[in-house]
Structure formats: structure tokens, C-alpha cells
Image 1 (spheres, rainbow, N blue to C red):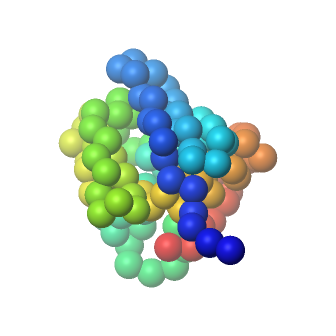
Image 2: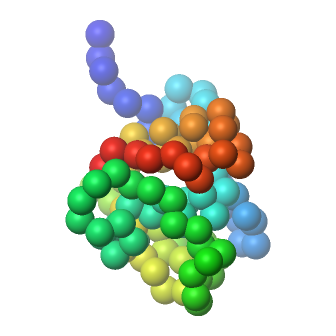
Length: 118
Ligand SMILES: [Zn+2]
């Protein structure tokens, strides 16, 4: 049995939208709020170098712009997201995006207290 993870087949992030949708190769669709994606940005600037990934509320940060400007596939395993304020160091693995999507569906607003492994 192949243990291959689902990969994005299609990514929808129209200008002005507040969510990014990912259609996965196993037929599941994840709808990820920009606030969730940015709050859980996995980069070292946001998260430091140790410990689980935690939610940093974008609404409490100065000069954060939640417009998603660029989505770039990197290394065939991840997406690099670029935001309206120029922050573009977050590399989100497909596995991480799928986990975020699944947890976000299950938890809704309670999502912000989640922690994720790197
Ligand atoms: Zn970041």
C-alpha cells in the first residue's frame, strides 16, 4: 500500500477572497481562512526556532495585511505564501496545510488554541 499523502490538485485564491481553497487529490476540499493561515505561519520569524507551532493573532499585530499576494509551489511538497505586508517566509508543507484544513473544519473558532508539530 502506497503511503503517499494527498497533494493539491487545484488551489483557489481569488483576489479579495478571505479564504484559500485547496482541492486535494483524494477529493477533499479544505477552506482555509487567511487569518488562520497567517496566524499559524510556520516560519522562524513568527514561531522562533523551537516548540510547537502556535497561533499568533494577526489582528493583534501591527502592519499585518491578510491579502494573499503570492502562492508558489516549492520543492513539490509545500507552498510558500506571500502576504500583502510583504511577509513571505512561510513555507507550508502539504501535510501541514491538510492538517490545518481538517482541524479548522472540526474546531472553527476554537482553532486558535491548537498547536502543531513542525
Ligand atoms: Zn511567518
